[in-house]
Length: 331
Image 1: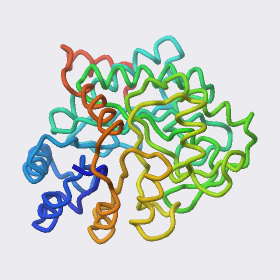
Image 2 (image 1 turned 45 degrees about the vertical axis):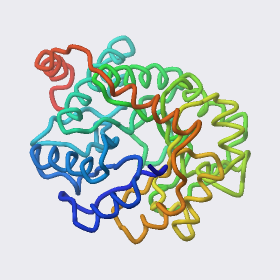
Image 3 (image 1 turned 120 degrees about the vertical axis):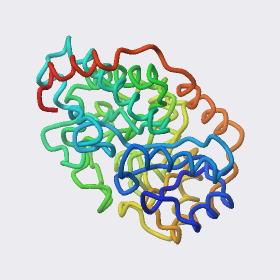
Image 4 (image 1 turned 60 degrees about the vertical axis):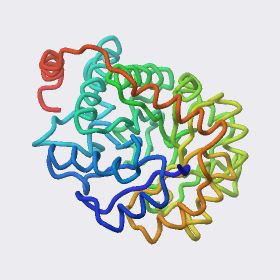
């Protein structure tokens, strides 16, 4: 199997996609709203994908709550955005509420055959944080972001879903949307410590996703995703993160150049698994070709991540939903 994750075009597996999966053997797949019609269709799709690759491949999704919720009403419950927990419940109850919310999200995902959630967001917000992060950030204080992020991780793992923290080493200072352009953060190294702190507190997370952000004080020439200096010196060094490192989506406009070159640059920088999300096979093929066979330390990290999805704890789903509704009458 190769060290990349790819997306699909729509709600059903196309013949050419099935052939691509069999041929290239991606480590996993990632799903979006375009892939979802209803519960039965979604479960059939995840089963089909695994049949195509011939193994129990990980299936990823971004299910944070708030506006980043690929499974949503009316078929799935709406969940609060990250910023609401502490703002509306206060610090003491917020951690309990986050843990319960992510345990419910894990329940939803496992029913659909999804076992990796690209959450929680550990980006630290400030007064000028771009709307692309906005209410996805738990708080403006790194200690509170870390505490709520850990509660989120615990909730997911209790439900048998592996968490991926993002966007390491921090997207909160970015003033642009990396889906559309490359953000450049001009903050000093000392100022960046505020952003790194939340990730350092969760350095034991099993997986993380890079930020397509340039940190001029560290490497003015490349975003984290393709910067050996940022990944080596900051992510693996100063932050101390040793888990599985995913690139953010290589199809985002923050990055330039041919798609195989994007993937090669990410791997050269120290990324373990390349992520390509938009379902365009013309882009995904060169990413697949540039992705190495998953082996060595990267393979061990991937196996450790999936141990988080190996079992679930007993859980009162109805009781949890009632409690969440009492806290947030309109999520």
